[in-house]
Image 1 (cartoon, rainbow, N blue to C red):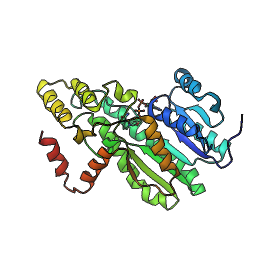
Image 2 (cartoon, rainbow, N blue to C red):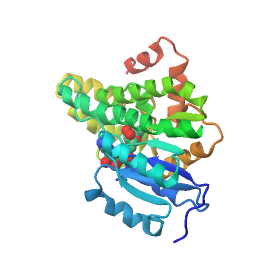
Image 3 (tube, rainbow, N blue to C red):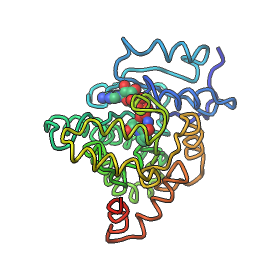
Length: 295
Ligand code: NAD
């Protein structure tokens, strides 16, 4: 087995058991130029590592390393960060990908459901970011890619707890990014719309179908009708009708990692770029509110 090149970028990714995390880890670790050493971490190695191991084949323990890390458990984070620093001497890139979706309707959700989604999607990213920052500062070099969402800047009348967790992540990231740039550490929020993973495919094959089905969780008939109508009559207000392939997202993330300077925000499709343009030139927030209400 060939050893990785000395100048490889060392990348730590969370939530690699499936979905975006797994695809991004494999894409980067398979780089023909061997520019990356990828630590693909997952919450439960015992039950989930086999799939990734099989797909990794001969890059396992060469450019791809699988480790256990639960973003809600500080000791698992500290263990992996220490191991990487001991073995590789640095962490160049952190991809905060682990996330969970909302479970039910915001009015009837127990408060525990709000805490749970914040615990993973927000506090998990905070824990990870704080764990790697001292080593990045020491090297005066680093990239942090927060896998946020279109839901990180655009409220959608469903999944309020999930969306709130992504807004929190964006607020945190926007606050830490400017001073960290002085240490040559570049923080970016990545704002995908629909990506074809299990998180979404469980609801349907295209965004409109997925929303229509997801809105079925709303207990009250009147509200269910209102929200279903809002979510399905104009797909453009949500995320457009595009479903991004995780491989396309992986390629976009690679470009961010390799660019000499990264932007703070990346929207991963035209439809989301359009939403972002509307949002960020409207200080009152009325344009988007009216767009929702016209339906
Ligand atoms: P997914 O459900 O397929 O994968 C999520 C991964 O996170 C899984 O491997 C899961 O085991 C892991 N995870 C959950 N809790 C964890 C914890 N406590 N510690 C470590 N890992 C944990 O979902 P996905 O679609 O691949 O989503 C990945 C990220 O992308 C999430 O942050 C999600 O919010 C975001 N995102 C997804 C979409 C989409 O359409 N799929 C769109 C925008 C943003």
